[in-house]
Length: 191
Image (tube, helix red, strand yellow):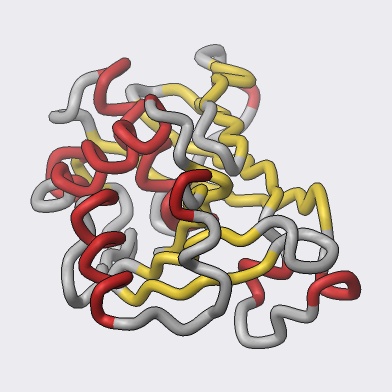
């Protein structure tokens, strides 16, 4: 899971290169609540050196191979990360979330709206890339940094209905559609 975070303006001059010295790393860890195992780099996502951000890769592995699964089982153990992401969104520190991190927020949204004890199935995922900056900044070592601005569309089967969520890469979630009159075709949940 990867996210891009704003470097605070008062610290902008300090982080002028992609390499962090131990003191810079400690300051970043403290300011953003990161752990030593999180991979943190400085990347340029603007033309020239005018927009440097932190690229944070969380050392987290999770999957949705169990279908259908209870929401509680999927997010159990990851509430600390979900809470951290919500705090970043509240403080407007997030520049962009990758598809997996946005999915985590979408599942948390479902848990809050429908209850965490319900079973659900992720049926489909689409990524709409809003900007390709690879030709401008050449972040060749990070596909996510080259395509930071996205809109993710997730289709879920939950509580006897199909729910389609849109998640902007800055963390805003919108329920696009909720189809509960599913008499016109059967759903195979074991796909």
